[in-house]
Length: 269
Image (cartoon, rainbow, N blue to C red):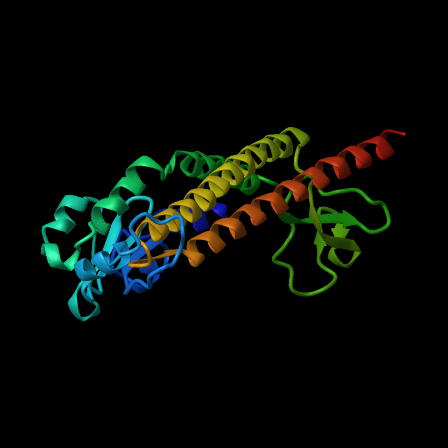
């Protein structure tokens, strides 16, 4: 059930300049010196040299998250903002000659979609809220020889043996820790919420992974080696781990439902 926290952390990527948040990006674009590629399908083989003249040793890097962009500044300083126009005003044309800030904003606005993740988190929170209502451990007091339960009256506060309580001496009372079974309807609702969250998380992760890899590869190719693109490994790993936790939770609740059904069938016979 840790998807709620994990996916919320992923959504927060590139919204601030803290070290942890900076590492949670979808795609990173930066400049590098391009190496000419000799191919018979290239009409203009000198394009790499032309782009190298534009880049001219620029070290700017742009990282894209679900709700923000982070751009490296001189001396390793990072500037983060959800508005690309505000970021672009902080740099001069020679610092971002190929408009990587603009390209990252187009990727965030046109391809990245956080709606599925937000709905998945909502379903996960619903499942967690239902799990919290499950009965916990409590003490059950019974008479050893008769097996009669003390009608809900709390027994305690007796330190010395031989003191009578309700006509029964305390050394004749057996205390056990018991835990009641949750109702089947509660478990079924929690299972339904978890399955829905798992499905939405799966779709969002496939979308996130496929889109990030496709965009990173395409931009690197059209940049003819002058643009270095990377897919955020930390964000991808956290997303898949969260999905795995949801699937494990769903399997556990399904096992609980089947166990309750089996127990009910056995006790009814």
